[in-house]
Image 1 (cartoon, rainbow over the protein chains, first blue to last red):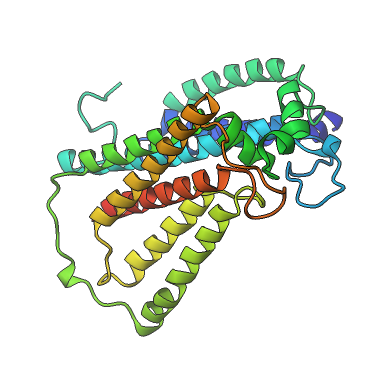
Image 2: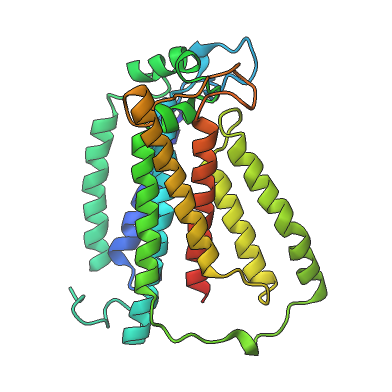
Amino acid sequence: MNFLSNNIYYIGCFGLIFIGLYIVLTKKNLIKVIIGINFIDTGVNLFLITIGYIRGGTAPIFSRPGLNPERMVDPIPQALVLTTIVIGVSVLALALSLAIRLYHHYGTLNLRKIRELKW
Amino acid sequence: MRKIISLILLGIVCVGIIFALYSIPFGKDKIKVGKHYIYNGIKETGAVNIVTSVVLNYRGFDTLGEVTILFIAALGLGVVLYGKKKKRKEGLEPASLVLYTGCRFLFPLILLFGAYIFIHGHLTPGGGFQGGAIIASGFLLSYLGCPRKWISKERFNITESLGGLVFVIMGLIGLTIGGYFLSNFLPKGIANTLFSAGIIPILYCAVGFKVGAELAGIIYNMIE
Protein backbone atom coordinates (compact mmCIF):
# COMPACT_ATOMS: atom_id res chain seq x y z
CA MET A 1 0.00 0.00 0.00
CA ASN A 2 2.87 2.30 0.79
CA PHE A 3 4.44 1.51 -2.56
CA LEU A 4 1.18 2.37 -4.29
CA SER A 5 0.69 5.70 -2.55
CA ASN A 6 4.32 6.69 -3.14
CA ASN A 7 4.29 5.95 -6.85
CA ILE A 8 0.71 6.68 -7.85
CA TYR A 9 1.79 9.40 -10.31
CA TYR A 10 4.28 7.15 -12.03
CA ILE A 11 1.67 4.42 -12.24
CA GLY A 12 -0.80 6.87 -13.77
CA CYS A 13 1.51 8.13 -16.49
CA PHE A 14 2.85 4.73 -17.40
CA GLY A 15 -0.70 3.41 -17.38
CA LEU A 16 -1.52 5.98 -20.05
CA ILE A 17 1.59 5.07 -22.04
CA PHE A 18 0.78 1.36 -21.90
CA ILE A 19 -2.84 1.88 -22.87
CA GLY A 20 -1.60 3.87 -25.86
CA LEU A 21 0.95 1.21 -26.82
CA TYR A 22 -1.69 -1.51 -26.56
CA ILE A 23 -4.01 0.48 -28.82
CA VAL A 24 -1.24 1.02 -31.38
CA LEU A 25 -0.33 -2.66 -31.37
CA THR A 26 -3.77 -4.20 -31.60
CA LYS A 27 -6.29 -1.86 -33.20
CA LYS A 28 -7.07 -2.00 -36.89
CA ASN A 29 -8.63 1.39 -37.48
CA LEU A 30 -6.13 4.09 -38.40
CA ILE A 31 -7.95 6.80 -36.44
CA LYS A 32 -7.80 4.63 -33.32
CA VAL A 33 -4.07 4.12 -33.84
CA ILE A 34 -3.59 7.89 -34.03
CA ILE A 35 -5.58 8.30 -30.82
CA GLY A 36 -3.26 5.71 -29.23
CA ILE A 37 -0.23 7.71 -30.30
CA ASN A 38 -1.83 10.74 -28.67
CA PHE A 39 -2.28 8.70 -25.47
CA ILE A 40 1.44 7.92 -25.45
CA ASP A 41 2.19 11.60 -25.99
CA THR A 42 0.03 12.64 -23.04
CA GLY A 43 1.55 9.99 -20.81
CA VAL A 44 5.08 11.10 -21.60
CA ASN A 45 4.19 14.74 -20.94
CA LEU A 46 2.67 13.80 -17.59
CA PHE A 47 5.75 11.78 -16.70
CA LEU A 48 8.09 14.68 -17.46
CA ILE A 49 6.01 17.03 -15.31
CA THR A 50 5.92 14.44 -12.53
CA ILE A 51 9.70 14.13 -12.42
CA GLY A 52 10.05 17.84 -11.67
CA TYR A 53 7.52 17.82 -8.87
CA ILE A 54 8.31 18.52 -5.22
CA ARG A 55 5.95 17.55 -2.42
CA GLY A 56 3.91 20.61 -1.48
CA GLY A 57 5.56 22.67 -4.17
CA THR A 58 4.31 25.83 -5.84
CA ALA A 59 4.47 27.00 -9.44
CA PRO A 60 7.81 28.62 -10.37
CA ILE A 61 6.35 32.13 -10.62
CA PHE A 62 7.32 34.94 -8.25
CA SER A 63 3.89 36.52 -8.54
CA ARG A 64 4.05 38.10 -5.08
CA PRO A 65 6.92 38.84 -2.73
CA GLY A 66 7.71 36.38 0.00
CA LEU A 67 7.43 33.18 -1.98
CA ASN A 68 9.97 30.60 -0.91
CA PRO A 69 12.20 29.51 -3.82
CA GLU A 70 12.93 26.25 -1.98
CA ARG A 71 9.33 25.13 -2.43
CA MET A 72 9.15 25.81 -6.15
CA VAL A 73 8.96 22.92 -8.57
CA ASP A 74 11.57 22.44 -11.25
CA PRO A 75 10.93 24.82 -14.20
CA ILE A 76 12.90 22.91 -16.83
CA PRO A 77 10.52 19.95 -17.34
CA GLN A 78 7.64 22.40 -17.61
CA ALA A 79 9.43 24.38 -20.31
CA LEU A 80 10.26 21.16 -22.17
CA VAL A 81 6.67 19.94 -21.92
CA LEU A 82 5.49 23.25 -23.35
CA THR A 83 7.61 22.38 -26.38
CA THR A 84 6.37 18.81 -26.47
CA ILE A 85 2.68 19.70 -26.36
CA VAL A 86 2.95 22.00 -29.37
CA ILE A 87 4.92 19.44 -31.34
CA GLY A 88 2.41 16.75 -30.34
CA VAL A 89 -0.45 18.84 -31.65
CA SER A 90 1.27 19.47 -34.97
CA VAL A 91 2.21 15.82 -35.39
CA LEU A 92 -1.38 14.82 -34.60
CA ALA A 93 -2.69 17.22 -37.25
CA LEU A 94 -0.21 15.89 -39.81
CA ALA A 95 -1.16 12.27 -39.01
CA LEU A 96 -4.86 13.05 -39.33
CA SER A 97 -4.31 14.72 -42.70
CA LEU A 98 -2.40 11.65 -43.88
CA ALA A 99 -5.31 9.53 -42.69
CA ILE A 100 -7.68 11.69 -44.74
CA ARG A 101 -5.52 11.18 -47.82
CA LEU A 102 -5.35 7.43 -47.21
CA TYR A 103 -9.10 7.25 -46.93
CA HIS A 104 -9.51 9.12 -50.21
CA HIS A 105 -7.02 6.82 -51.91
CA TYR A 106 -8.06 3.41 -50.58
CA GLY A 107 -11.62 4.03 -49.51
CA THR A 108 -11.06 2.43 -46.12
CA LEU A 109 -9.25 3.12 -42.87
CA ASN A 110 -8.79 -0.53 -41.95
CA LEU A 111 -5.08 -1.15 -41.74
CA ARG A 112 -5.42 -4.83 -42.59
CA LYS A 113 -7.09 -4.03 -45.89
CA ILE A 114 -4.69 -1.35 -47.01
CA ARG A 115 -2.04 -3.07 -49.11
CA GLU A 116 1.66 -2.80 -48.27
CA LEU A 117 0.83 -2.47 -44.60
CA LYS A 118 -0.13 -6.07 -43.89
CA TRP A 119 1.84 -7.91 -41.26
CA MET B 1 -3.27 -14.11 -30.89
CA ARG B 2 -2.11 -10.63 -31.71
CA LYS B 3 -3.56 -9.32 -28.46
CA ILE B 4 -1.76 -11.96 -26.41
CA ILE B 5 1.56 -11.21 -28.07
CA SER B 6 1.19 -7.48 -27.49
CA LEU B 7 0.18 -8.03 -23.85
CA ILE B 8 3.30 -10.14 -23.29
CA LEU B 9 5.45 -7.45 -24.93
CA LEU B 10 3.89 -4.77 -22.76
CA GLY B 11 4.48 -6.88 -19.67
CA ILE B 12 8.18 -7.20 -20.46
CA VAL B 13 8.49 -3.45 -21.05
CA CYS B 14 6.55 -2.78 -17.84
CA VAL B 15 8.89 -4.90 -15.70
CA GLY B 16 11.89 -3.13 -17.19
CA ILE B 17 10.44 0.29 -16.44
CA ILE B 18 9.55 -0.65 -12.87
CA PHE B 19 13.16 -1.67 -12.23
CA ALA B 20 14.44 1.50 -13.84
CA LEU B 21 12.11 3.79 -11.90
CA TYR B 22 12.61 2.08 -8.59
CA SER B 23 15.76 4.05 -7.87
CA ILE B 24 14.28 7.45 -8.77
CA PRO B 25 12.63 9.00 -5.72
CA PHE B 26 9.38 10.84 -6.30
CA GLY B 27 8.89 14.43 -5.21
CA LYS B 28 12.37 15.09 -3.87
CA ASP B 29 14.75 17.86 -4.79
CA LYS B 30 15.39 19.55 -8.11
CA ILE B 31 18.46 19.28 -10.25
CA LYS B 32 21.20 21.87 -10.25
CA VAL B 33 20.23 23.74 -13.43
CA GLY B 34 16.68 24.21 -12.21
CA LYS B 35 17.97 25.64 -8.95
CA HIS B 36 20.18 28.07 -10.83
CA TYR B 37 17.24 29.23 -12.94
CA ILE B 38 14.98 29.73 -9.93
CA TYR B 39 17.51 31.64 -7.83
CA ASN B 40 19.00 33.81 -10.59
CA GLY B 41 16.17 33.93 -13.12
CA ILE B 42 14.69 37.29 -12.11
CA LYS B 43 18.10 38.92 -11.85
CA GLU B 44 19.29 37.64 -15.20
CA THR B 45 16.18 37.93 -17.34
CA GLY B 46 13.72 40.17 -15.49
CA ALA B 47 10.81 37.78 -16.04
CA VAL B 48 8.83 36.74 -12.96
CA ASN B 49 7.61 33.54 -14.58
CA ILE B 50 10.65 31.27 -14.53
CA VAL B 51 9.20 28.92 -17.14
CA THR B 52 8.92 31.85 -19.54
CA SER B 53 12.48 32.90 -18.87
CA VAL B 54 13.65 29.34 -19.55
CA VAL B 55 11.61 29.05 -22.74
CA LEU B 56 12.48 32.40 -24.28
CA ASN B 57 15.76 33.46 -22.74
CA TYR B 58 17.88 30.52 -21.66
CA ARG B 59 16.55 28.25 -24.37
CA GLY B 60 15.30 30.80 -26.90
CA PHE B 61 17.02 29.16 -29.83
CA ASP B 62 15.26 25.92 -28.95
CA THR B 63 11.94 27.73 -29.09
CA LEU B 64 12.78 29.05 -32.56
CA GLY B 65 13.35 25.47 -33.65
CA GLU B 66 10.07 24.41 -32.09
CA VAL B 67 8.16 27.13 -33.93
CA THR B 68 9.88 25.96 -37.10
CA ILE B 69 8.68 22.41 -36.47
CA LEU B 70 5.13 23.70 -36.09
CA PHE B 71 5.53 25.64 -39.33
CA ILE B 72 6.83 22.59 -41.17
CA ALA B 73 3.96 20.47 -39.88
CA ALA B 74 1.43 23.07 -41.04
CA LEU B 75 3.20 23.22 -44.41
CA GLY B 76 3.20 19.44 -44.71
CA LEU B 77 -0.49 19.32 -43.87
CA GLY B 78 -1.17 21.87 -46.60
CA VAL B 79 0.87 19.84 -49.09
CA VAL B 80 -0.78 16.55 -48.15
CA LEU B 81 -4.28 17.95 -48.39
CA TYR B 82 -3.57 19.98 -51.51
CA GLY B 83 -5.43 19.16 -54.66
CA LYS B 84 -8.42 17.64 -52.97
CA LYS B 85 -11.65 18.50 -54.69
CA LYS B 86 -12.93 21.69 -53.16
CA LYS B 87 -16.57 21.43 -52.33
CA ARG B 88 -18.24 24.76 -51.98
CA LYS B 89 -20.31 25.23 -48.92
CA GLU B 90 -23.48 26.32 -50.71
CA GLY B 91 -25.47 23.32 -49.59
CA LEU B 92 -24.86 23.98 -45.90
CA GLU B 93 -27.76 25.00 -43.76
CA PRO B 94 -27.21 28.34 -42.05
CA ALA B 95 -26.75 28.09 -38.31
CA SER B 96 -29.59 28.93 -35.99
CA LEU B 97 -29.94 32.44 -34.62
CA VAL B 98 -28.70 31.55 -31.14
CA LEU B 99 -25.56 29.85 -32.44
CA TYR B 100 -24.85 32.59 -34.96
CA THR B 101 -25.28 35.46 -32.47
CA GLY B 102 -23.42 33.56 -29.77
CA CYS B 103 -20.39 32.92 -31.89
CA ARG B 104 -20.32 36.47 -33.24
CA PHE B 105 -20.50 37.72 -29.64
CA LEU B 106 -17.88 35.35 -28.29
CA PHE B 107 -15.33 35.53 -31.11
CA PRO B 108 -13.80 38.95 -30.21
CA LEU B 109 -13.81 38.07 -26.52
CA ILE B 110 -11.88 34.87 -27.19
CA LEU B 111 -9.35 36.79 -29.28
CA LEU B 112 -9.00 39.33 -26.47
CA PHE B 113 -8.46 36.58 -23.91
CA GLY B 114 -5.82 34.94 -26.08
CA ALA B 115 -4.03 38.27 -26.50
CA TYR B 116 -4.16 38.82 -22.74
CA ILE B 117 -2.62 35.41 -22.15
CA PHE B 118 0.33 35.97 -24.45
CA ILE B 119 0.99 39.60 -23.51
CA HIS B 120 1.15 38.67 -19.81
CA GLY B 121 3.24 35.59 -20.51
CA HIS B 122 6.15 36.78 -18.37
CA LEU B 123 3.94 37.57 -15.35
CA THR B 124 1.25 34.90 -15.12
CA PRO B 125 0.92 31.28 -16.18
CA GLY B 126 0.55 31.22 -19.92
CA GLY B 127 2.41 32.53 -22.88
CA GLY B 128 2.62 32.62 -26.63
CA PHE B 129 1.77 29.00 -27.29
CA GLN B 130 -1.20 28.90 -24.97
CA GLY B 131 -2.54 32.24 -26.20
CA GLY B 132 -2.11 31.13 -29.78
CA ALA B 133 -4.05 27.95 -29.08
CA ILE B 134 -6.87 30.02 -27.53
CA ILE B 135 -6.97 32.31 -30.58
CA ALA B 136 -7.11 29.29 -32.88
CA SER B 137 -10.02 27.90 -30.85
CA GLY B 138 -11.83 31.21 -31.46
CA PHE B 139 -11.31 30.75 -35.20
CA LEU B 140 -12.58 27.18 -34.94
CA LEU B 141 -15.74 28.49 -33.27
CA SER B 142 -16.25 31.02 -36.04
CA TYR B 143 -15.73 28.38 -38.73
CA LEU B 144 -18.26 26.07 -37.16
CA GLY B 145 -20.78 28.68 -36.08
CA CYS B 146 -20.90 31.18 -38.91
CA PRO B 147 -19.59 29.53 -42.08
CA ARG B 148 -20.33 32.56 -44.22
CA LYS B 149 -17.70 34.73 -42.60
CA TRP B 150 -14.62 32.73 -43.39
CA ILE B 151 -11.29 34.42 -43.05
CA SER B 152 -9.10 33.73 -46.04
CA LYS B 153 -5.96 31.65 -45.83
CA GLU B 154 -3.70 34.39 -47.17
CA ARG B 155 -4.11 36.56 -44.08
CA PHE B 156 -3.06 33.65 -41.88
CA ASN B 157 0.02 33.15 -44.00
CA ILE B 158 0.95 36.84 -43.77
CA THR B 159 0.48 36.93 -39.98
CA GLU B 160 2.48 33.75 -39.54
CA SER B 161 5.37 34.99 -41.65
CA LEU B 162 5.40 38.31 -39.81
CA GLY B 163 5.54 36.55 -36.45
CA GLY B 164 8.47 34.40 -37.51
CA LEU B 165 10.22 37.40 -39.03
CA VAL B 166 9.89 39.45 -35.84
CA PHE B 167 11.35 36.57 -33.81
CA VAL B 168 14.37 36.15 -36.07
CA ILE B 169 14.96 39.92 -36.37
CA MET B 170 14.92 40.33 -32.60
CA GLY B 171 17.42 37.50 -32.37
CA LEU B 172 19.68 39.09 -34.96
CA ILE B 173 19.54 42.50 -33.25
CA GLY B 174 20.53 40.74 -30.05
CA LEU B 175 23.38 39.10 -31.95
CA THR B 176 24.74 42.44 -33.13
CA ILE B 177 24.27 44.28 -29.82
CA GLY B 178 24.73 41.67 -27.12
CA GLY B 179 27.10 39.31 -28.86
CA TYR B 180 24.91 36.19 -29.05
CA PHE B 181 21.64 35.23 -30.70
CA LEU B 182 18.53 36.41 -28.80
CA SER B 183 20.47 38.27 -26.15
CA ASN B 184 18.28 40.49 -24.00
CA PHE B 185 19.31 43.95 -25.19
CA LEU B 186 16.34 45.96 -23.89
CA PRO B 187 16.30 47.28 -20.30
CA LYS B 188 14.89 44.74 -17.88
CA GLY B 189 12.72 47.17 -15.94
CA ILE B 190 11.08 46.50 -12.60
CA ALA B 191 10.07 42.90 -12.06
CA ASN B 192 6.35 42.11 -11.84
CA THR B 193 5.26 44.97 -14.11
CA LEU B 194 3.97 44.64 -17.65
CA PHE B 195 6.86 46.50 -19.30
CA SER B 196 9.67 44.41 -17.90
CA ALA B 197 11.89 41.55 -18.94
CA GLY B 198 13.33 43.21 -22.04
CA ILE B 199 12.56 41.43 -25.28
CA ILE B 200 10.55 38.59 -23.74
CA PRO B 201 7.07 40.20 -24.18
CA ILE B 202 7.88 41.13 -27.80
CA LEU B 203 9.04 37.61 -28.55
CA TYR B 204 5.99 36.12 -26.90
CA CYS B 205 3.67 38.38 -28.91
CA ALA B 206 5.42 37.22 -32.09
CA VAL B 207 5.12 33.57 -31.01
CA GLY B 208 1.46 34.08 -30.07
CA PHE B 209 0.53 35.53 -33.45
CA LYS B 210 2.52 32.87 -35.26
CA VAL B 211 1.10 29.92 -33.34
CA GLY B 212 -2.45 31.29 -33.53
CA ALA B 213 -2.23 31.82 -37.28
CA GLU B 214 -0.62 28.43 -37.83
CA LEU B 215 -3.17 26.47 -35.79
CA ALA B 216 -6.03 28.41 -37.41
CA GLY B 217 -4.53 27.60 -40.81
CA ILE B 218 -4.38 23.92 -39.84
CA ILE B 219 -8.04 24.05 -38.82
CA TYR B 220 -8.91 25.81 -42.08
CA ASN B 221 -7.12 23.16 -44.10
CA MET B 222 -8.78 20.30 -42.25
CA ILE B 223 -12.26 21.78 -42.60
CA GLU B 224 -11.89 22.75 -46.25
